[in-house]
Length: 75
Image 1 (tube, rainbow, N blue to C red):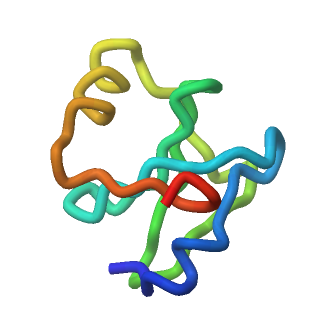
Image 2: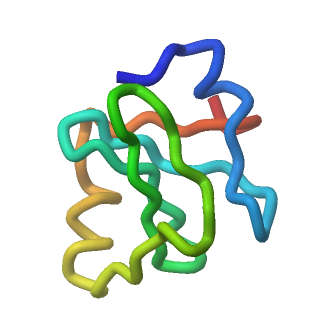
Image 3: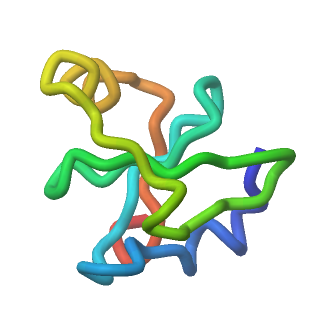
């Protein structure tokens, strides 16, 4: 799980906008780019080379997750 202080400061490395954190899935998701970044042992891996494309149906599920928390300025 990501620390709240850290989560408040994280943004997508390319568009510099907030990410949706899904702790149960260990991912940070960018719905604008439909890309997800892994969170490994509480460490956000915000490298584009580690990001994954997210299919539309999975992205919709991520966005509907009531436990999702926004990073960055959207907190």
